[in-house]
Amino acid sequence: MQKFFFFLSFTLAFNFSNAKQIIYKGDYTIWTNPDILIWSPDSNLIIQPQEFCLALKRLNPSIGEPKCRVFGEWERDSITSRYASWLHDNMAPHLESKHLRARNPIMLQKLNQLEDKTVLFLTQKDGGIYASILEEQSNSPKNLLFLTQYSNSLEQSESIVKTFFNKKATRRLSSKERQKKAEEPDPFYSEIPKHQTWVGAAYGIGQAKFPLTPHSWYKSKLNSRVKNYRITADSLSLWNFVEDKAPFTSIYFGRVWYGFIGGEFFYRYSSHRVKIDTRDTLYNELDHWRFKRHETGIHLTLSKNFESASFLRSIPYAFLGFQYSFFNEDIALKKDREASQYYKTRINFENAYRGVILGVGSHFVFFDHWSINLKGGLASRGRMLDKDPSASATTSPTIIGGSTIDGFISFGLEYFWTVY
Image (cartoon, rainbow, N blue to C red):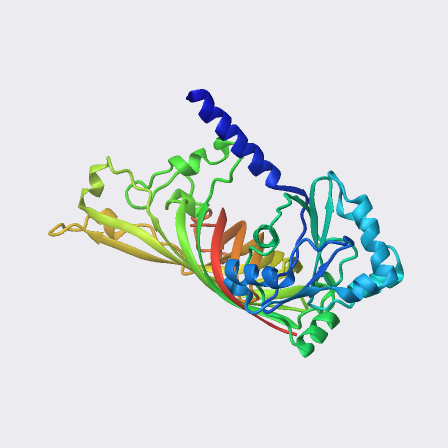
């Protein structure tokens, strides 16, 4: 019994594997309400057009009302009939599309005049059927398959439909649409847009420690703690006072002119906890202490458009600009606790800091309007010194946040529109 099941499964697998052999496969279009032209050099027609249309309608409801007929015009033409005989003689396993390419200029012209008609080529050979699709703008069969031959025309029609016509049909183009499509340039040489505009919102993470760099560069900042509400080992970087790693959200608006140069305005928000030593009993009076960071700025972008697919446009870019950072303190004592003298004389940041922002990114625009934006770069912040300290000031004035740098990455969702 076990041997019988093994033999049965082996036989079924063998028959199934020989039911269809894909020699090569290419892309082609299945139209709604199509004109199917059956073309063959054989004297005996393998399938009947009426039965083939019935199989199409039953097995692919999206195809609408197909029209199927023998392609008599080509069977009576000497050029096309010679090409059909040549295809019959040369079709074999392990071929490629280039091996079956038509070279006669008249034959190429006839292929280009098919418009949205579909030619189904069938020929009996090697104990089976070689089948392929030809359509407009193709100088060779789009694909080539070897099928099992059935004695019944309806079964043969169903096997061909399941093989070639099993995908959703596409609406046929009108005469004006066809003319417009024919006049459209290649996407890689298409008209450059006058400007592209987008609005978006993004979520990201910024931190002072850059990936793949030595930990020793940041050890002092990462381990820094604020003593007595105002003292750190080094006041030059803001990251010695507040946590450097924090998520942020941003909104932005941008525009690029002629697919090359543009700019973007942005607003970014994040919240940073002060780096206090929780073991210090002085901070027992403290409920929370953090600084909310608001940033606004503009950067110049240099970009390039690439048509990655019919539905996708990739726009990589580099940017360089400036920003202003504002830190608003958010601090509170625990309930019923009195403020200590240290609390009253705590550190204060400058009203604003300014710095440079630079990096790279890319827009991925789907269906001309919806976009994903991936971006990464570096941002600096420094104290705004508009004038030198006065002579009465101390010889070494304390600089809070004189030089602060961090890296960031972000993911954004955008709405895009283009004007040509």
